[in-house]
Image (cartoon, rainbow, N blue to C red):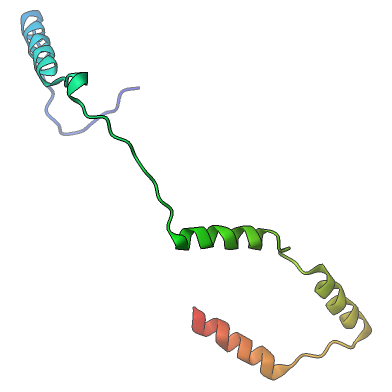
Length: 104
């Protein structure tokens, strides 16, 4: 699928003789620049994990074992709401809202 580029000059197609010369010159320059495999030194890459990364991996595995939702707490709150026993601590709620807002 061709892409139309506006306001760029178009190149004239090279004649057969010019194209052959251009290809020969390109091939010669590639062969001159091609490295000899025996001249390339063998390199090995090493990776080291810092102690912090190791600690993060350990914490991640511990966290992955903890359930995202505490089903027992959800059931307890649900039962207290249904029974009309759930009480909201205004001061604790306000403190938690302020703490969350200050972290943003």
